[in-house]
Image 1 (cartoon, rainbow, N blue to C red):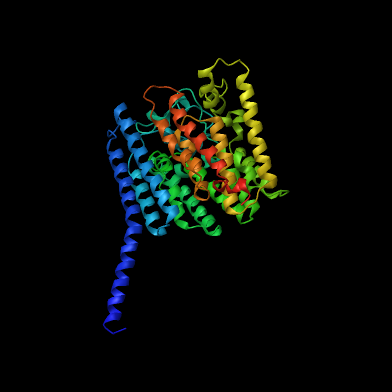
Image 2 (cartoon, helix red, strand yellow):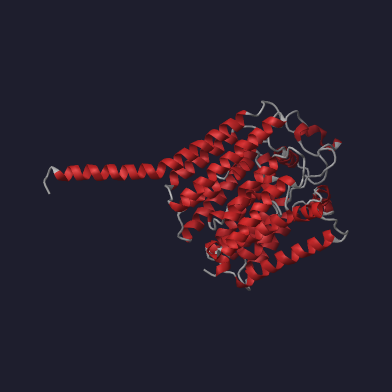
Length: 455
């Protein structure tokens, strides 16, 4: 080879590598740009000063853009699973999306105003479970920004459990603002993202898989825009999963107890984190929950807040709130005892699944993620909440087990934001029927369910 030939070959190789790198990166860059554009346009649809989007067509347009970004996200996930990109750009896009929504006021939910109010009440030295927001005893705490926007202010005690209240109290002593509360939720969510990155590393899976959670528009909008307490739950649960894999059972139990008393649902994944015959995790979990409840126990049974009434308001006592039962009732006449039978069957099925996982499961990261996903998805399907953000946490274990059915159920509930016919069956059917079809396909193709296939 001539001396002249070597530089030429080097330049050719450089160009080839550069071109190949461009081909790998460009599709993901375009997808990220598309998600950013959808997010910006959706935020701009909000009418300034409105507690809501502003009008029905604006809300439906926002939901349409959210769903379009979900399509782009799904393509980005498929691309990442085939050819993992660099981690730094993935995280940079995730941060940019969150900062964009952090700067916007919440307009898809008003729950965050209750969080700020509960923090304000505690900053004043008052138990948040003691009074409804409209009680004259709290009149001195009212303002024109937070108080008028609290949902159920004139009849409901706060529904949020003690760990959530501790977070609200901590934020309330620093700043009693919506932005401060959103920042707290994002910081706790970041802890869950960090824990998931550690689990991916432990599982020897590509770290850029965190895109599955970090770019998912459902947790993005639910936490960065509306500041839902699910961000804190996701953070605590992610840390509990990491501690369980690291065999720090006491720490895992304490973190799990905190996650449960942030938003009760993580209770169902306890069997996935427990190691057979281990006593540290359940003991630490129980002690943590007892201590947290003890902080507010002076009000007696009122410490459970609005929860008992909430279950009735959402149709969970009558069975109307459960999609499988409601959908069946639209096809045929059901006897009065069908709701009790459904609840018993659901509890039995999830209980048996939890027992199988507890006694025969393993705690390597992939199996742990699969078991958490199975228990969480089965519970959410059975309960079928009407609110989209309840499903956001499914995106976290999906980083470890990206099953199509799990990916669908972690993003498709955004349909629930949009109900033009006010029908409690049609829109949920559009969410759950494809999830069922994909789940059957995943089980049929056992390689998509390594925790079931024994891989």
